[in-house]
Amino acid sequence: MIEGEYAPPAGSTVPPGAPTGLTATAGQGSAILRWDPSESSVTGYRVTVYGSNGTALPLGSQPPETTARTQTITGLTGGASYGFSIKAKTAAAGFGAESAKVTTTIQPVTDRLTITSAKWKAGDFRVIGTGSVVGSTVTVYRVTSTGAIGAVIPGAVATVTAAAPPGIGDFSIRLRNGAAPAQNPARIYVKSSNGGVAGPFTVANG
Image 1 (cartoon, rainbow, N blue to C red):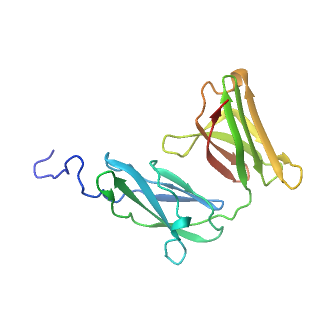
Image 2 (image 1 turned 180 degrees about the vertical axis):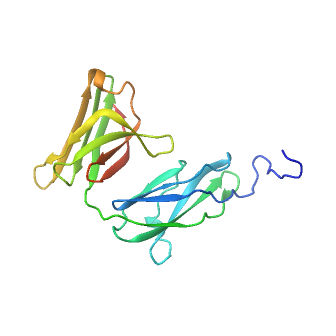
Image 3 (image 1 turned 90 degrees about the horizontal axis):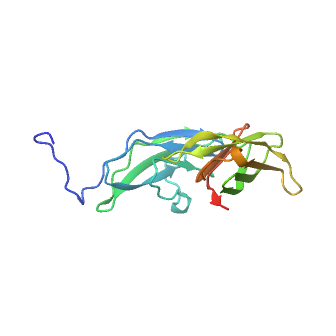
């Protein structure tokens, strides 16, 4: 440690500093937030969402705490502007100061995706879901260690086909034998060629 520099002792009740590097990337009815790593004693983060008038949304509309350095906020109104801030917490001191706020304007929803089932076993990987745009192409992606969309799972692509009423569209992706991932991907995202995103979704064994 540099002479004259102060470092709080382990288990210190000094609150953590405000996280830095917060960015917000607008999606269809959603926003993906990312921020820089905090001190090693940090055990979680809490995002606060603000409406276009600068007032925090009601507590029930706020996202849950996360231990990752990214979070996807869904259920937002297309065309509206939202603000976001982040604060960190430690086990000993709780939450610290709130970061500087960032704002973004949400894209209108033109394509809604859902994942209804994702299963993996040796030699067999299957993802089933729905889409609101028949004919769009959906692709499955891995989830990074920070919770963001990662690499494409090779071959995990399908077209949304018309569903029986009252549904609009369905998709089904199945990779067999050597085409299936060698291990359970754990969590996945699905993205549509029309811009829709669903995930992260936990892949079950079986």
